[in-house]
Every structure is written in structure tokens, then in C-alpha cells.
Length: 379
Image (cartoon, rainbow, N blue to C red; front, top):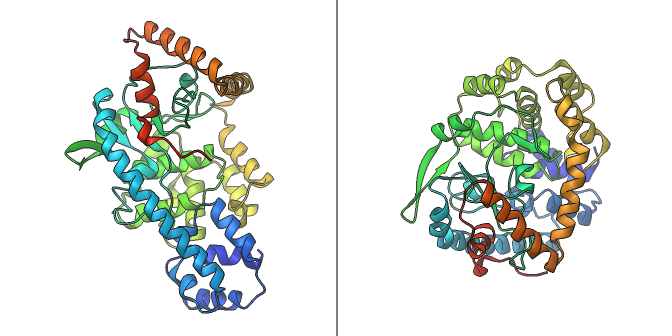
């Protein structure tokens, strides 16, 4: 591992032991490529997680210190604005959905990062029991792709089934009813919303990481670490559910990586009890290196392929190229403004008729894209 890579992995640790601190100090004496370091910390969304050891260290170039400090202040400001906007629009979301569950970054604003969120929280990810409306592509994705009907990018993402992981393929058997039953309720400005149980969150993030090919994934492991630290995790429940939900491989790999990044976060006996396939374990033990997480590479793609190509999903994977081609062409079409509106109208109208739903184009725009005040600034 190069000096720059080594420093990044030390930076995301909030506590360093004596040997790690000595290594950390010695690395700062090297002739480091700070442009490369900042680039890959940015790609992996971990600049905000940079340890105090780095920021306060006198050996850190002043230019880099100012950049990190400025970046954190900017993110804090944007996250506070995003949180206020979300809360102002929450009544409208609940107008269409009686029950919603906050997912990922949206959830963490109200759980593990109540004070300050070290990264941009991103899109509003919401799990709904029954989507207000349907569209064709939404049948093949874990959330409904939103056409450019409001002249802006996606801001609201309505998820419906956490089992749909990759181009319509249900690769797991997550019990969605149990996910809702085990969730907790929190109050936001007088409105009740659900948060996923910590054990279920770990299983879901493990699966999500694989589907995303561990791309830009370092921040997800830090957040998984915080979920574990701030909750009394029932590891036996994770072992049991991983087996029942067919997520053994996904969970084992993610917990193995988590322990390689942050020693001792996951009990060793837990890894022994999760029944991952021998092929998966052999790859991780013999071929995996932490640096693969920093950027896309052949080894990460190979790992993802090992995880998703299983005996019980093999027949489903054969249809993936056809579905992927359809979705990619559909997305290209809806990026063209006039075609976008025509296709969106027909798409949602047809599925509204099939499902016996009322069709109102204004409601659809508001439901899928949010009010205009929530739009992203144009680049």
C-alpha cells in the first residue's frame, strides 16, 4: 500500500493506538501527493470524517488544513438547509404515503448524526409500503426513476422493496413485513416517521454496498461503524436474519471489511457463525486488499460477481442484459425534454389505469420531484 493510501485509512480512524500514531506522524514527513489524497477522500465522501489528528497536526500543509476546514463548514451549512427543506416538505410526503421509513443519509440526520453530519446527506431516500403511483421502469429498480418532468434532477427517491438490488433481480429474501414491524417511530415536527432497526440497517447496508460494487463506499463503512457503536447490537439476530434473508455472503464480506478497517468493531465469533460460501471467504482471505475500496478495479468487480452469481440467482441474471438495455435507452429518452413529458404522461397514466389509481399530472410532479423550492441548483 502506498503512503497516500495508508494515510487515508488512518485518517478515518477516530482513535489511533501508539503504533498507528507513530505511523501517522511518520507518513506526514513523507513527500505526499496531497492532490491525490484529497481527490480520493472526496470520491469516497470521507473528507468530513478526517480525524482531528490530521487537522490539528502541525505537519499538515496549511493549504490542505484550510481546504478541509472550509469543506466541512460548507457541508454543515448545506446539510442544515437540506434538513429544513425536508421537514418543510414532510407533510406533503405524508399526504401521499401514510407510512414512510427514512433510509440511509436521510435517516442518519435523526439517528447517528443528530448534531452534525460529516458528509452531504444527498437525496431523500424513503421506503414506502405502497407507492402512490407506478411507472414502468420503477418495476425494475429498487426505487422509481424520475423523468425530468420538473426541469431538475432527482431529489426524492421512493423505495418500495429492498430485495430488488440490481436491474430488477430479487437476489435476497428480506422480509419487508418484518422490517416494518421491527422499525421504531420518531417524531419530526409533530409527524411520525419510521427508522429501520439497527440490525436490519446493517444487513441492508451490506447488501446495498455489494449492489453498488463498493463504489465510493468508505463512508458507508464509517456509518456502519457508528450504527454499531451507538446501539447495542444483537449479533445473534444478524446471524439468524442473514441466513433467513439469503444475505449471508453480503453480510459476512461487509463485516469482514469493517473489522479490517476498524479492528474489533465486530465480534470475531459473529464472523465465524455467519454461513458465507467458501468461495467468498477464500477470495477475501487470499485476494482482497483494503486499497481496493478507494477506487474501482478488477478485483472489486470480481468480488461483486462472486457475490451475485449464485445457484439461486443464475437463471435471473441471464435476463439482466435485456432489462439493462431497455432501462438505459428509456433514461436516454426521458432526458430529452419534449419526449420526456410525453413518455412520462403515458407511462404514469397507463400504470395508473392498471392499478386503479387516480391520475393527476400535477400531483405526480409534486410527488416524484418535490416542490420547486427543493430543486437542486443547476451546475
